[in-house]
Length: 164
Image (cartoon, rainbow, N blue to C red; front, side, top):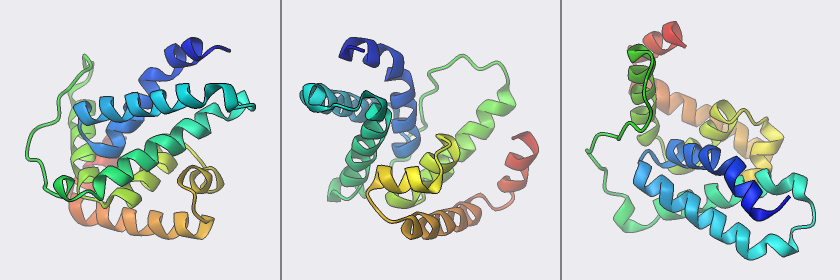
């Protein structure tokens, strides 16, 4: 597989994951681009092509978490997220916006764990590998992240369960 083939196959998924991690399409594009640039730089040195997705996830998550620690990113944006898809069901779009807005209020590391575990479908071990931490840390960050989501969503959590 060439870099170009990998890029074409994975760009939308990487961009979507970046959006779920940061909650802003413009920043998601920047993070996805930075991750692909880093991959291109290391392409020749990566021997195990089956590990490319894990490598990209780890690079992407690190970029988003590192950026969230910068002082100018601690300010909360009040802008509405842009909708880039053509929705077929307005309830699904409303649910997605509620979830993304709630994810924005969760600390970056917990948000990364929640996105990787529940939206990207990784297990605890794969999430720990992507984040470079222990499985225990993933479990505790998952618990704290879900607690933070419940606090933010409140009554909306029942609506999400009903539509999801």
